[in-house]
Image: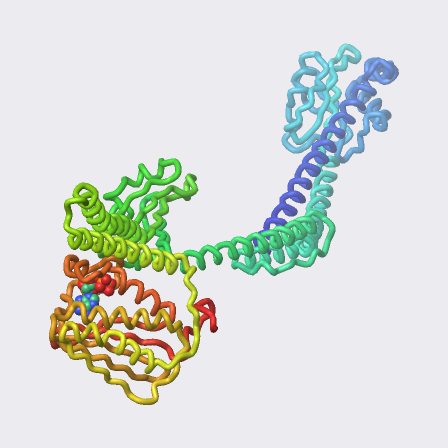
Length: 595
Ligand code: ADP
């Protein structure tokens, strides 16, 4: 940049000087020539003018006895050389024959080859005064016809313009010298200018390049108070502003990037042509694919809405799609409707939400069904009693009343279980933690169901090692869980079965396993038996007084203790269910409180 600007400066200076000198030179030389021409004709007019009658009279009046008029004229003219400016060298006078123009006399000899008959001489030969000037000619002349003693002559004044020419030549040399000096000065000046102008400009350019390269911390030194100084100051403040703005933008982008990266919802952004410009890990996870250059809106979501429709929409469009058994809700919306805009697709996994909705519906249907069955029974027995009480044998009436009581017990039972579950759901159910011997709890359960087991001719084994620790847990609830799983084993094992209760400790956890050789649970149902109201065989369960809520309540209780309740794989018929509890109670705050 320095070089080019410098060359430009030199060129401008050179052009300026050359053109200035040319104009001045041409003007001066023209003026000098003009001045000389004017001066010449001025002198001629003065000499031959009316103010100088003596001269004309002397020229025209012959002396007495005059024989050679031309010689006399020469005499008169030589007396007036001062007035005519004749110096005999550059300017001469000549006396010519008035009819032929032949040289007769003069201040100098006629030039070789005779005098040139100029237009002015021709005019004078015709009797007129010839004072026409010809700027293009290299001479100035004037021819005046004179009649003397009946003879006609022409007085001819010729100036070879040498004076003007030599002056012009001297001036030309002077101008050339001035030009050389001027050029030298201009080069020197352009160097100075380049120092004062180009150097700060160069620094500014370097600074701009660094800013363009991303280094906004660069501050340029302001060395002058002129326009360049102001430019440098503006540049500094602009760089500062840019630095803050870019930092703010970068911060904003980082925030957004982090948000995109960690948000649970998937986001895929497309440009106006439908090319993928951004996607987050959640989107890849949900749609089970990665996104690259080759992916387009058309390919990914074109089946839902055309891109143009999404670009035009106010707000957003929504759709649902199933991917690998999961329900995905898609929200499609345009962003920044300018040239840079595009379309954003937000993917929300609603599988749990949909499942929860379905579960709620099922639950309401189940509850209604479970309550309606005993209610119908109660109503029909009560109606029969009401209609035929006097005629009914007392035993039968008693048995009807028993059914009514049983059914209402069952309803109470269901309602109680539902209340318990609802307390778990709302987190209002607190554990009352206390230390109690785990082994004793298992033995107590065994004792409690022994009679019932014997009633069904089951063989009930208890396999209890010594030295089981005391555990921190809600005694009543743990007993409820144990009773539930052991009762289930009795209920769902045909009479005469074998049921084994065993317990033990592994590291900081105790366990109890209940194994039976009963009907077991088909593979398809194994995952679902902890669901509310889920029963493999509804009739059988209801018949044995089951509500289908026992295991779900047991699971909630065990979860609160941070324990585990699960089915153990077994190859022989029947079911093995295992309960595990931490010796020192739930670890986290909020699980319960010690009593
Ligand atoms: P219920 O009150 O019906 O017994 P639970 O929640 O306790 O309800 O049990 C859920 C279902 O799990 C039962 O209906 C039964 O089908 C199945 N089940 C539980 N324990 C056993 C077992 N030991 N053997 C076979 N099936 C069982």
